[in-house]
Amino acid sequence: MTLPSRSKWIWPDWQPHPHVRVAVTTRAGSHSPSPWNGFNLGMNCGDQTARVEQARHHVEKLLQADHPVAWLKQVHGKRVIRAGESDNEADGAWADQQRWPCVVLTADCLPVLLARTDGSAVAAVHAGWRGLQAGIVAEGVKSIAPAGEPVSAWLGPAICGKCYQVGDEVYRAFVAAHTDFKGAFQADASPGHWRFSVAQAAMIELARLGVEDVQGGELCTACDLTRFYSFRKEGDTGRFASLIWLDEEGN
Image (cartoon, rainbow, N blue to C red; front, side):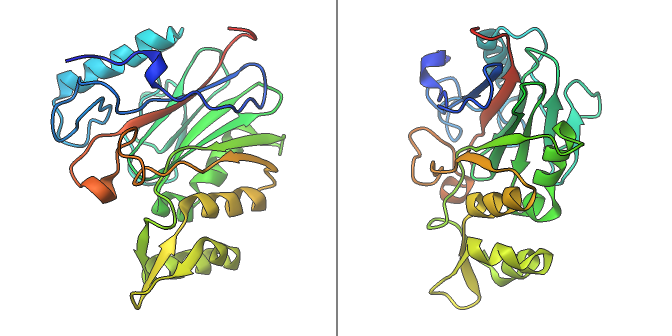
């Protein structure tokens, strides 16, 4: 049983401000047995609580942060909390203090990491189709930029449009919210079904919110089971983390 080093994580080439730090854990390692093979950080997928807590402590140790990672109890909603709030049933967290990591756990849903371009605040939101349609991205942007301050976004690993089939009810829900979302769907060969790009839907939403700098969105969880967990592809599986925090320049 081995715990991974920082070298096994993904460190995106995205720097909206010198104070912003971002990391994505992978499933590399042998800490978690089958069916969570690798390095599971999710509490809601059947793994032993003690083992998941050990994995989370390992993440905190490697980050050497001043504050505990703001782990959430994600429920596919649109609530965004400030890091450190005791009621952590939410799908997003934000922070304006240095070295207080915000995190979301995923295994096909889209992690959306947000940063004020002046380096004063960051947020992480969990954007499955339900949360995205309900407005989780808008809540995340509003939490760090209440007066419309410039924001940059990075889209983490999620199931891609070629791999993600949804029913007509998902298409109707998005189009009813805004017709621009039609651009995230392609008609599937199966009647009443669509291929849906959650990353494209997030880009459409971010554009509507005035976020001009949007990067990432190319990594597919279902296409890369070596590095990521995919609920759609694997069924019983683990969760990996996408983290964002503020730090001193150069650290």
